[in-house]
Length: 315
Ligand SMILES: [Zn+2]
Ligand SMILES: [Zn+2]
Image 1: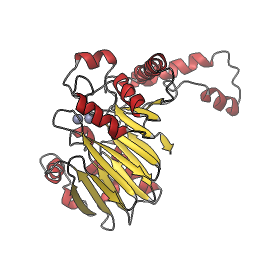
Image 2: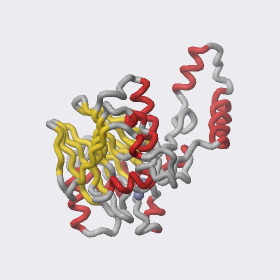
Image 3: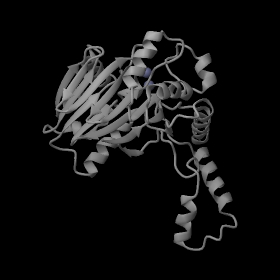
């Protein structure tokens, strides 16, 4: 199973600002003083030693994750990152004569706005199989591309489109690949997905609170995540914000870690980053999350990552 993050930001696409780029350049130049860098090889060596917040960015596109499994392409959410996924498929000549299995958590803008820009959808030889628990999700996607809001209607995306309405807490199979869903706690509703193939499992759970909810909800969610190889989870808030912003529909890294440890998850990816946070602040959240885990669960082997745009993972 190959996983790639195409969009990791929540709420709204967040391009990196000039001042943030200037901060990175200033920091890198300061670190280069007295480093005796006199040829391209030494430049590369020096760059390799830099920290991630100076050399790179967490990314600004909204929710979209690609999972390639057994020759099939699954796509979880269609945020602005979906555009780059389409471009990448085009560049690698993988954009024609294909089926794409798309699963939507919900239809907030940050989870659907990349769809009209998904290049493979414009070729009649492709098939898009779109899944959601929302009965009128086809209508909602058409509305996004109504001429009042967007110049190209869905009719002009010439691929074959199949809309599959999923029942709550159901499982759908494509050969040996199973995708199950579970309702989360979010204004307007959101659904998590679990993909299982042979011994591998991937859980995607964004746009949810996990605080002050019923025991049944938490137990069901933990069971849903049980022994997953990878859990991608909403971590938009800091711990303090999660307490203040009850009912805003998002969560903190700490809540995710508590659940992941108890569910026996191997790797957790903190996701749906707040558009107000720059790379340094996100790295700080990551460091704090690692410390929290070390202090509270010294015997746990859970690995904690920040979801980064462009990051790939093989399980
Ligand atoms: Zn969202
Ligand atoms: Zn949402």
